[in-house]
Amino acid sequence: MKTISEYRKKIFKIIIVVILALLFLISLIWFASTFKQLYRTGNLEVDYSITGRPTRLHRPITISDIRVWMTFDYVNVIFKLDPLYLKNTLVITDSKYPNISIEAYARHNRINSQVLLHNIEQAIINYPNNK
Amino acid sequence: MDFLVQAIIPYILLYKYWALFIATFLASFALPIPSGTLLIASAAFASQGYFNITTIFIVALIASITGDNASYWFTRLYGRRILSHISFIKKILISKDFTLIEKAISRRPGFIIFISRFEVISTLTINLICGLGKATYKKFLLFEVLGSFANVIFYIIIGYSFGDSWQAVNKLIGNFSILFFLVIALGISLFWKKILGKLKREMEE
Image (cartoon, rainbow over all chains, first blue to last red; front, side, top):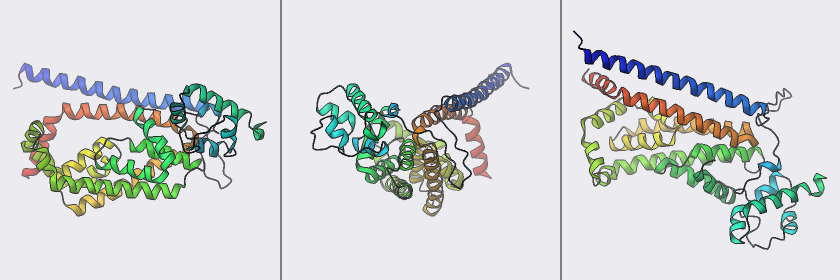
């Protein structure tokens, strides 16, 4: 014979299992909807190329993707800039250039990192090859 | 992007494969560094032409395997001696439940070792339990290598495929995995006694 407390425990467990299952389902739905949202906003672009190249799910990088953790060397490579272009345009005298992050350079030279980021974006827009 | 990743990624851009090796090794050895995110980022950098994808794969795989092995041997040789100095850990180590879990993992280590490679905290925990419980090294090595291989391939494919979108995708995976592991942890804690009871019965058989 099961006592009342045992029944209560069983019911409590069932309720918890249902809640856990619901949480799991909600997280799955949330995952799918976020994926869909990213896809719609263009953050995930699917290239259904069947020309032999691998199928890739990415969009081209833009200046809005530049972050303060990026190094100048990395920015030069991904935006195909002349290695000396940013140095000359932004009058960078730091000997560590280009192997220094934007944030570290701003900190060492007491510049606001967001201002520096904006200046880098402007310099890339004005890069001769981009015109 | 969380603070830890934001702090480590500039070093990966600066010191390239060496930084990736050290970060992945430490993540497997003892520190809860989000190595999956770092691998996704590195593979995305490779898709942009900044890194070489094959080198990333080799470096990450070697770092992961050596880190796991170092963790296993360190805890096997010195684990009990060091951890027994901490009173609450000592209590856990000598408890019947812990011995039972150790035995269960030693008996059927494959799936647990393999699947634990995909999450940094579970990797560290399983390495610790296997080392402390002196699980058979050959079995540990086999499933650890297979798990590391699958884990590295998984994150590299995500990073390389999503390329410039890696930050958005990483955030998506991060949020989802937090919820996923929360549900699993809640489930385990709820049925803890039942799981232990089942393990006990299996051991007796």
